[in-house]
Every structure is written in C-alpha cells, then in structure tokens.
Length: 227
Image (cartoon, rainbow, N blue to C red; front, top):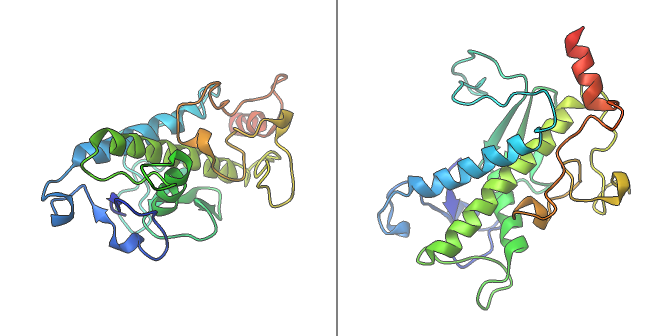
C-alpha cells in the first residue's frame, strides 16, 4: 500500500488509485516526501491497537519482523497479524478468513474518516488541502486511529477461530441484528466504524475485557494457552 490522499474529494472506489502518495516526493505534494505525515498514521494506529488490549495479559510487539504474506522473514512468527492493504474493499474496512492474519483496507478507512470528521468548508466531508497542515494532520491522526481500531476488531475475529467471541459484529449495523452488551455500541466488537473509531472519545472506547467474573471468550483463550 501507499500513504495516499486525495485533497478536496471524498475517496472512493472510482478515484482512490489517483490519490497522491505523500510519503514520496511527487508533483502532487509539492515535490516533498512527507515521512513525518506517514509516521502520524503509524503511531496513532499502533497506540489505538494497544489500547484495545490494555486489560489483558497480551503483548503487542514492536520492531519485530512480521510473517510476510508474500515471502520474507518469519523470525519470530506473530500469533495474530493484520496486513494493511491499499485495495478498495467494498464490503467493509477489514476482512478475516482464518485465525492467524487479517486485512485492513487503507482506502476504506480514509473514506470512513473523511465522513466521520466532516464537514470541511463547503464540503460535507473532511477533505482539507495539503496547505492546511493542521487540518490534514487531524485527518491523518484519525486515519491512524481508524486503522488501529479496525485491526483490533479483526484480531477479535481471529481469536474467534480458537474460542467463542459472541459479541463480534454487534450494534446497529449488525448483519444479524445483535445488540452490543449493555447497549454500548462504541466497542471493538461493533459491526461498523463510527466517529469513536477516529477521534479521542470521552468516555474512551472500552478495551476488550475478560468479564467481571473472568469468563468469556478471551478468558477462555488464555486458559487454552496455559494448558
């Protein structure tokens, strides 16, 4: 994938391939490589992902080689991996089909972030120009949070291949009309991204938890790993 953005237009399946990769020097971004902008996305994504598991005895590794999908190092292998993909995926922000890796789709996260943060100027969507640095950084931080939160959601689907995770795909957008526990929709299990996936939220999004009595899918997962 590339760190791409299309100023002044809502990203879509029709135009995402024309977006400007601001991480490299190109005429569309003033011939300046903005690795610092890319780092905003990376840092916010990692922080958002870690927050999902703050209540659990789990480790999010840093500076470790991933199990590459298209060749490369496998030292050590991550138990749960999420690949960030630059393709447009019409069915949602992420996809999980097995228990050890998932995809999160960068263009779809930008699309949802632009809608969630809008309006901007005369547009109902949040699509600032490159010249509005503060506005752009606000969007990129939101995209990073969206990636991290989507990755946490897909990790929940991976875990569900090992132990039951009955709360997954809950909320108003649930395909099976399943309410979230306690009626709280701002949870990682929720079926669709909303404003709380992109902005600092008060109260904060509750982390995945073991349950008041230590029961539930995640508690069972750690019991499985101790056997």
